[in-house]
Each structure stands twice: as structure tokens, then as C-alpha cells.
Image (cartoon, rainbow, N blue to C red; front, side, top):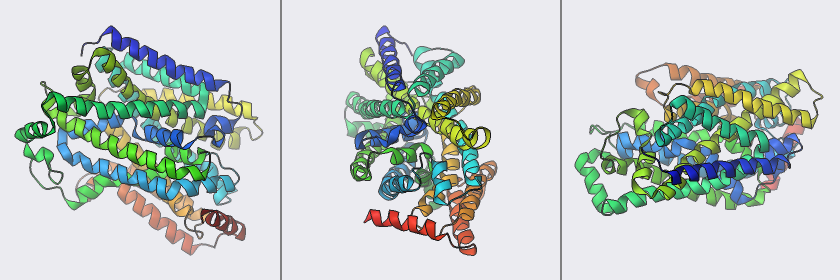
Length: 495
């Protein structure tokens, strides 16, 4: 791809704007609560857009279009699962989790919530959750770094390793400085930019190709199976297991710490409904457009993109072909926005988990707030460096890395979050057992191949973890009266 001075100028301006937000909130961050949760001060628009942007990441503009470019509308099942999952998460988790985390000793991280909800004085839940957060977020953050490196490599022609370094440095910059509020407000702007770009590209391509009908006819002429949601490109029917496996992506939402923390940080539970509508509309339109980009790219691009790695650049190549360099620069910056919006959130959650769940618990129990903020900032750099090492392989697939991390987090935490806010009888031991079963099932299932093991690992892991929670809870002692009364107080507040 050739690049113009206008595009370079747009990129530079955008990066400076993001760093400026980090500097602004640097002076407003005095406590650990400010740094990792923003003092619970997000309005509905920022909460919704921030959750959506940090959720979708670079894979929305790279991984999903790439999958649709290779498989056609078969990729729609992933989008359907994610759209449904987004709505259900906002509908059934957001409001109650917001209330519960405040009532339960003002929990500011997911690990805080688990420990306070079950009165776990042993700190086992906290340490376990910190382990799985760090493990799977390292992979997740690496996927964002890979997406950013592919962007700089494709657009500017930079060597992969230098492209990777530039993206990592920028993301570390404003996350290190401003913490949660910087991340959330940059996500707000990035979410708007991502939405405009993902909607604008298919519209522009369709207009060049002579309209929607003409475009679909051209795709059908290449291979009619590309437009059949129930078949693969070779004409064979998708099995029910395949469809369930693809839509199972939606289960992951209930356990993503970087999304759940937005629910905890919203200004009041009364703003959840408006945020839910905003997030649902954003997700449905963005996911649908991302699939459309991949399908249209099949006939729009004159030179075919061979392989998964190349296919994931379809969005970038189309942008550069369709739009004026200045507009292209804005839309290409949207890809960087998508990458940054998730990577920054993941860095923040991982660093806060290390600080709250390890440093303060094991190393220095009497650490001051200012010291904890400093340690969190240092942890951001350390975690980013490890993720950088994972991302140095240019053959990494963005979608592949995301799918593994998404399953790990979703199965480790999703069943616990969902059941704990709706079932009073759930116990501490069941939470520990459920977390171990969910996380380990993902790790083991991923190593197995063929037959039943081709099912996306989040599905069996989520089911096994949920069953474990119910069985262990029923076999153990009932929760204390204090825990039950706290649960009842949250339930009454819902009425």
C-alpha cells in the first residue's frame, strides 16, 4: 500500500490527541480507586461506548472481516453470538453487578468482588482470579499488539518489529499516565471513530460496485455459497454443533473483566438502561458491517489476499482504495483506535489485579494509595513487555489469539459472576472449584483435536464450570447469614 503525507499527518494528530487525554487525567488521578475504576464516575454514553470499544478491539476491523473474506456469511454466526451476548450482559449483569460491587465493601476489581461476596479470608479466590487474569490477558493483549503491528506494517510499510514497537509505546503512554478515566474517555472517542469507519467502508465499496444488488450478484458469481449462512464455501452444510460453537462466543461476555469493570464504574445503576440501548445498537450495526466488509472485499479487491494473515488486512486495503488520503487516514486511525481501546483496558485490568491481588496482599499490606498507583503504572509496563514478546511472531492470527483468551476469561469468571448475582446459595468453595474447572478446561480442550474437541472450548468449559458450581454449593454448608442478608439487600434494591 502506498501512503500519503495526509495520512501520516492524520495518524500523528490522532496519537497526540490520545496522549493528551492521558496527560489531562494524570493530574486527576490521586487514589487507586481513581486509577482502576475512575471513582465510579462514568456516564451512560462513556460507559456504553467504552465497554463496546474495549470489547470489540482490533479483531472487529481485522479478525472478523478476515474471517468473512475467507468463509463468507458463515462468519455471521460469530457476529450473532456476540450481538446477543452484548445485550444479555447489559440486560442481566450490568445493573445488579453495579449494585452488588458497591454494597459488598465497595469492590473496585473483579477479584475484590469475589473475595467480598463470599467473605473469603483465605485469599484463595483473589489469588486464583489474579492468576487467570494475568495468564489470559497476556494473550489477549498480545493480540492487540499484533493487530497494531499489522496496521503499521501494512499502511506504512514498516518492518513488523518496528511497527509493533510504535504501537506498544503509544498504548503504554496514555494508560500509564491517566489510568481508568483516560482509558474510558479515549475509548469513547475511539468507539465513535470505529463505528464511522466500519459503516463507511462497505457503503463506499457498494457505491463503487454499482449498488447493493449488483455487489451481491458479483459475490454470488464467485461462489454462491459465500452468501449462504448455513453452508461452508465448499457447499457442505454447517452442522448444528458448528453453529452452536460459533455462537458460543456470546457466552464470553459474562466473564470479561475489562467489560465488567465498566458496569462497576457507571455513575449510577439508573443509567444502565440507556447505556444498554447505546451498546446494543453500536454492536449490532458494527458487527453486521464488519461481516459485510469481508464479503464485499472478495469482489472489490483486484488482487486476492491469500491466507488468514493477509485476509485480516482486507479492511485496510479497502480503505486505502476507496477514500481520499485524508479521509483514509482518519479511517485507518480507527483501526488503531480499535486496537488501543482493548489493549489499554487489558493492561489496566492486569496491572490492577497484580497490584491489588498480589502486591498489596502478599508483599506490602500497608501500602499507601500513591504507592499502589505507582506500582500499577510499573505493572502496566511490565505486562506490556511480556505481551510484546508474545506478539513478536508476525504469523500470529489476531482472531486466533482473541478466541483463546476470550474463552479462558469467559469460562473462568463468567459462570461465577452470573450465578453469584442471582443465586444466594452459591458458596466460596463452589466459586473456587468453578474457576479452576472453567480455566483448566479451556487450556486442556484447546490442545485436543478432532470430533467433539473441534467445538469452541468456551462452550464445554462454561457448562462444566456451571455444573461444578451448583454441585459443590449443594454439597457444602449454606452461606452465612451475613452473606444471605447482603444478597437480599441487593435483590430488594432491584425492585
